[in-house]
Image (cartoon, rainbow, N blue to C red; front, side, top):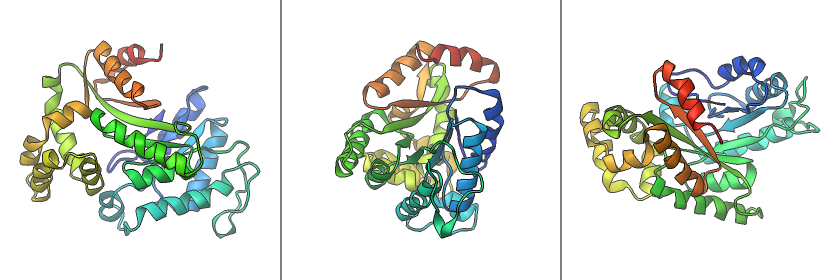
Length: 288
């Protein structure tokens, strides 16, 4: 169960705190919280509390977030995100390990964890993927076009080799936005989502890194000029069909399996559907 901490939704920890006492087997993962808006001490406290509450099922998903969330919505400076994430992992590892050691500033938890807390890093491009391969237990990517998957896999495995780890040894999770029904029905909603996401600088850089500058740049230009409607119109249908997953449950499963066959190890499903549709979809997409 992966909780998102989006620009204006719930925080990343509270939904997992609610889930901990009513689940027994599910991993509970923050997908994703960041070290800009929470210091290492607060992150360590929250992670340790959820690890205890869940009986050892918690995973800390950590990432740099974006300038929009960090600066515009929280009034902080978004600088050197790679270094910020590295420093956060280095500060958290001693405190969230067994046996626990002193962490940042000499911090030692009053209630130390009895099981180590795994750390998964949100990573889009090469340097952050390499960092995940070096210091984390997994990487978490998002909004990934199927044709861009080989480049992500290559960057992650290069990082594993550089860190002396076996290629393919760490988890690679990917979040998928699923719109059940015909693509023509879901593309209008996808346009709005993609133009908003794809115009955030960190995501625009990600798509350019994957080679989609030509399809992306007109949309970003319109979005930055304040013309949201025009930006949605200019959203690349080619890219949206590669990123969003449409169709019947069988078609959705088949598309997900293409990503899994390509190297994704954990599919994180964001089901964009009416509440009464969710039980049937979850059952249809459950592991067989």
